[in-house]
Amino acid sequence: MPPDHLSAAQARRVALAAQGFTDRRPAGTPDLRALRRVIGRTGLLQIDSVNVLARAHFLPLFSRLGPYPVSLLERAAYRSPRALFEYWGHEASLLPVEVHPFLRWRMDDAEHHAWGGMRRVAEERPELLDALLSDITTEGPLTAGDLAARHDHDRPKRSGPWWDWSDVKRSLEFLFWSGQVTTSARRGFERVYDLPERVLPPEVIAAPTPTREEAQRELIRRSVRSLGVAAARDVRDYYRLPAAAAKQGLADLVYSGEVLPVKVEGWRTVGYLDPAARIPRRIVAQALLAPFDPVVWERDRTERLFGFRYRIEIYVPAPQRVFGYYVLPFLLGDRLVARVDLKSDRQAGVLRVQGAFTEPDAPEDTVERLAAELRSMAGWLGLEEVVVGRRGDLTGPLSSCLR
Image (cartoon, rainbow, N blue to C red; front, side, top):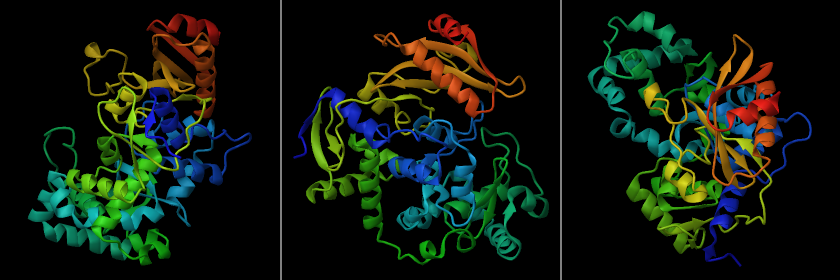
């Protein structure tokens, strides 16, 4: 019978099991089946443009599978028959194609909820959207660069982090948000746009569209399944659902018994448990977690579960950073025991540990286990060695261990 109370340690283990950290890493080279298993746990992979270490969507798979050919993910996302597609899930994401019908309500809401710049150009220059869609329909797949030469005559001035988004790019992103185009491929990191009916499997295109309420309830089910146990705001955040809809949908699933309310030791809020969640007696895990990994992307939840205060400092001026630019927590067992600021120096062929910091009460084998994971990551990234800097209390022991 499912519990109505979880200790703090049980909650950690439930959350990690839900994310695939009780699954054994493949003994040989991971295959498409292994990738599908991970996606089945996480539900999605967040995409981010920062490439100081590796693209964000590649890292959660490494955390769970160990070294794997990145061509697996590229094949699943950008080759037929596609298993994944790009859309706004938790930010820009790769999602299983079967989720597409459950996100059509978001596509329908584009004119109200897409970012301001996208909405503005859609309102002010509808003829540009029509022209771009016509070009993609007749000549696609095409990139923003392909289309800019034809339609983009006035480049924007600097106005913030998106200063270089032309009206063509904003229009394409509106068409993407509204589901009129999708990502056919990537050239480098640039999207190649095409029509959904030429990209997605026919059965996905033909799948009936559920009501908004049904779709949002399904996304809540998937959120709870991927989280294992979570507060209401964690559930809402996973697919960035509207507050009122998430509240009502969660209440509906509690009423039907598909989600169970539980008390969690140390939490000031109600926890919501997947009735099928495993509660392992222990977690045997060793993994570096990217800043955009679902285990840690909601920072308050990370603190509630692990007692680990984590902030990404990419946008913090360098002199004000506490731990570094691109810091990965190190998971050992069911605890976050250290953090490392990593950089792929591709020109020198080294993985640079620019800072390394231990957490209180980290076990004695933390250094050895972290060194092993860093060596594994370096090999996966095609880098010849790991070079450790001097910031942080762990750098001396780590450097000695790696030598």
